[in-house]
Image (cartoon, rainbow, N blue to C red; front, top):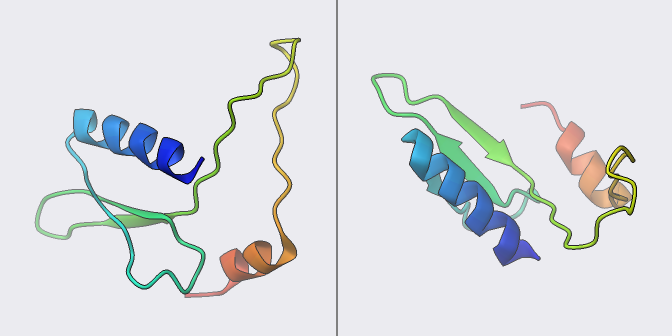
Length: 78
C-alpha cells in the first residue's frame, strides 16, 4: 500500500508542477515531501495511507486507524 499511495501523490504532484522526495532516513513516520518551486521553496511533509477497499455506500465516511506511535510523532512541534 505504501507504494500505491506514493505513486498516486507523485503523479498528482508532477501534474501540478511540484517536486517530491522521500525523507531518508524515515525517523519521523514521514513518507513523502511535497515541495513547490520558486525562491522560497515551501514544503509539506506527508504521512500517506492507502486502501483498495471501499464501503458499499459511497456516502459513508472512510476512516483509517492510526497507531498511537504514528499519531504522537505527527503531533511533535517543529
